[in-house]
Image 1 (cartoon, rainbow, N blue to C red):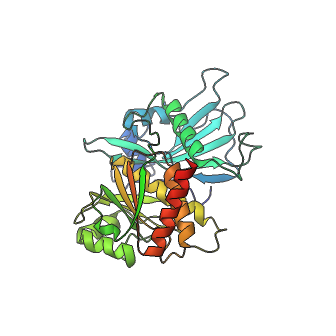
Image 2 (spheres, one colour; image 1 turned 30 degrees about the vertical axis):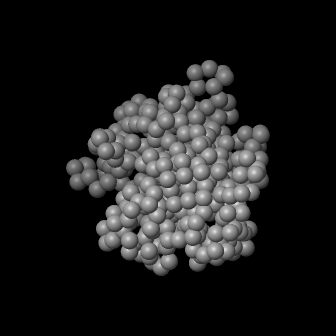
Image 3 (spheres, rainbow, N blue to C red; image 1 turned 90 degrees about the vertical axis):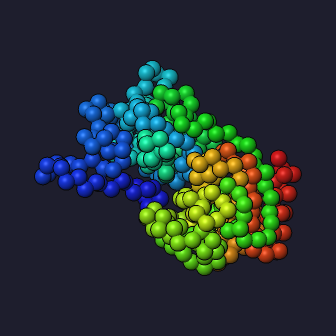
Length: 347
């Protein structure tokens, strides 16, 4: 597996464990309790399977499972008849989805446990990969022309299928509302919206530019909370409260640096926008303000940054109703206005 997939959950320091006894990971404890999984959990394969050979990263589908439904997934799924094409099992926080006839791995999904406001645990996908070798995976899969939105939607439906639930138990099935888009010149930290997006660094520490303005506006409480998040990788997003800002929430994402556009930068920047919208959906934010991610110190040409931003937001499945791109100068504003008009004409 590549660096693109999330690390496995760390083990808990449970002092009550006997010497030499395996200690359940934090994820497993959140899912099953301190005693770990029951005997009927499918932690080992009872069938011959082949791992993914050529993994390609997918944005994780925006969804949430209850503890009961995550437990159903972790108990494993065996096809009921010849028309059912899938089998599934979990190891720790990682779900493996294989073709039932061949045993070939198609998807792997990493989950994280989140505390809800009613004291229970909910479970959300944090990273995913798909098999990109069409001879090993799906014959109709084109690794050079991946429809990421279609793959995200299909993966969401497949996870629900193996959980036995027709719809997500804690979050309605998300269908694109095509949020209203607008662009302005200003400071994203001053925006009066449900959530603003911070152009953060990997350590989620205070910095310059947008990041510095967000931390100054939010106050010292923000740094205490971002430190506890353990950093953020390029293309991902993490969320905190807004603290001293007008916005209720701050979504932190790390944009890639521009090289020449051939090193995956456009795809990674698009993931930033979609990961931020997924965070917004978790807290039911209906209005989100983005800075012009990548177009400042990260070196993206403003036109490229604008086109990627608008395309990524338009392609996302989200509950957000309004997206505002907050640009730092007039030339950048003109590029975002142009990109919004182009997509409106194509709709």
